[in-house]
Length: 305
Image (tube, rainbow, N blue to C red; front, side, top):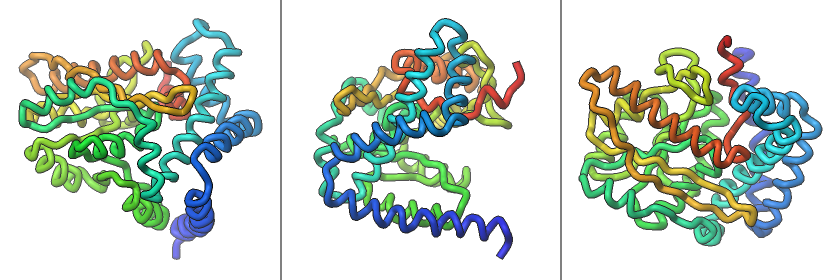
């Protein structure tokens, strides 16, 4: 066994008993207990892991400059970390099917008429979202509302951990399409769109190579053109959807009107224009709820000014 494979297996051995214990606790304790634990864990990590806090604050500084104070950035950093723990615990909570109805009830659907209108075209819908709010439970609500909804997820590179997570995902009450390869993804996405179903793509991931250059918070960023290319190929409308967490830990799943796609004839220009539209929409959402976006991503640090 290579050193890399050994380290991967070691990580799996550490996580497996953790999830086994968590699995039992999630069956016997109410969600409110875990949400309170998320508050405590988030505050502790913010205080005790300075590298994590500094990364968030550095990203906030790149995005906002001096328009918000250092104190405000510290508060956002704490709230981002708390929300990350709450998101993880909520997703874990849905592993037990008996726990799902309560969480589904805590999600309010807003803008359903926009989605229904887009589906009337009969070409399926490409839903785009961001690493904001608890986007991982979006499919739970949509399927409970009767929509055929599939979420494209990135597979974990560690095969042992990926196998562990895949076993739990089967119990989450959602339909996932692993991004195992472009061929595998398209083999699942295209038939779903032809059946007039909904595909969710998380559209704000930074690409070190091969992305389209867009402006995001007044900085150049490289973003995968997948949603744009897919829409141009299939004619499926693009509908932005975002999860918003409220102070009482209820959620709103906000569905926006379909994007008005540009009329550029050149496919490359059209894909670039659509990708910029998506990222502008995401930026607007992040500015409205800055403590709910995952500011932990390494994106602007990877590029020179």
